[in-house]
Length: 342
Image (cartoon, rainbow, N blue to C red; front, side, top):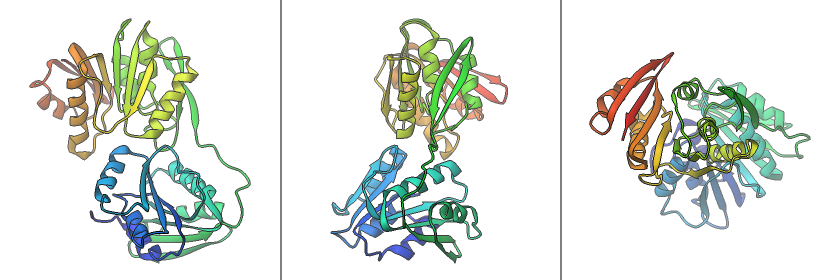
């Protein structure tokens, strides 16, 4: 199994022998904590939940030899089934609102008397400790060289639940568009500047078919569907929360011309799209960008256009001319717009 990150390893060391039968956890890697907790076998049942399909698929492959008492899910929310133990490993640089929402959902899933264990890779943490104390009457802390570990017992349901979902309105030309975002979805509570750059650059004509790769909350997909008559938009994202947000946004705007699939490999219908939109992430040494480019090559019809935004245009300038015609890269404020013809 792959190396385990600091806070997840800390949890493994602290709670592998926990006696409860029903366990819910997350992972920063490939479900190493879940595998350790499930390793004692039935009757213990362990569910590990991911918000990213690629990570979930990697974890399933890594844990393929484990028994039926380990389940790996990829879904927008933690399952609501009552459990004895909830365990969360966190990054010190993780998204604050997502951490708060996970803690709240974990508390809801616990039975009265159930335990929550959480760990962070920051040995000097005070923030996670504070968030835990908002939910539990008593929180125990244990410091370690690789981070901080917390344990708490649920004594009563929460008096009030916070809704972390955000509905916002953005302008596309003369039109106001409503969209929904959630913690863990790219650019939560705002319209990303890269998306605004694509909005300024994209041209959509009546009857076109558009693919939005890595749709996030759906800003581009919604705008494209409203730019002209009879525009059909198909969106892809590896985050189930993103797919949920886009579908909710389509309902808010009265759109029935948008479809969306949970996908981590760029599996879009082949050769049918007139326009392919993308705002690829910059990490992973352009491996994800390569997935986006290959998806555009497969999904665009001859003469179709790919339009993407980046802060690192040199990679595209080097790799696109061999595969696309009429490659154009032009600056747009802090970004570069890359346009290419299939």
